[in-house]
Length: 210
Ligand SMILES: [Cu+2]
Image (cartoon, rainbow, N blue to C red; front, side):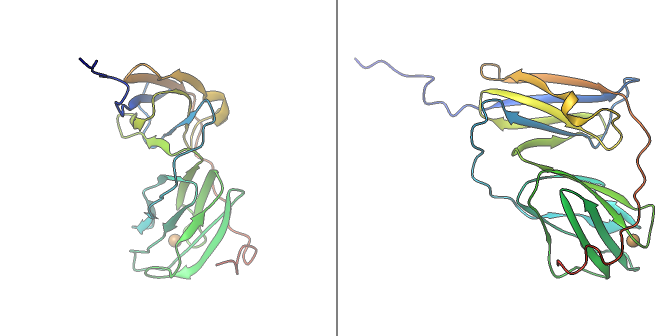
């Protein structure tokens, strides 16, 4: 009689449940939690879908968007005024000069890092694109919780980013061995600071690339 193999063929995945709070214990929405395989194993084939950051009521919607590196983002303008979207973050410098409706080209985010978005017309408009080098990421909801699902069972370096965190992102890193546990919990309490203001784009500097 043949022995029955019950476990070897299981395409089992694990989850990491994250909870992000400020240093007063209040839940923080819009935090990006990223898990990077600790063994540095190559990431799965990239099939990024296009993302959208809308402009509604002179705000970026969503305000924080996490995308996998190599992903394009469209910036449709749903207001009846024109916007002039730009970033001069090192991870992506671009400018979408004054426009209404949908710009012809989405913008490709090909370098990991945080991209801060502004509008040259409306100083208060601020948005963030977190460009992740790992495909395993999630954003916290109002309850400060994010669930990373369908991870291969292994060890991960897990960290968090939030626009108002005081410390550097690297200092939040924790090692989670998720090789045997179906669901691992991770929690941060982050000292916060007021949101940084965006300076205006140096006009023309980033123009012409798109
Ligand atoms: Cu604007």
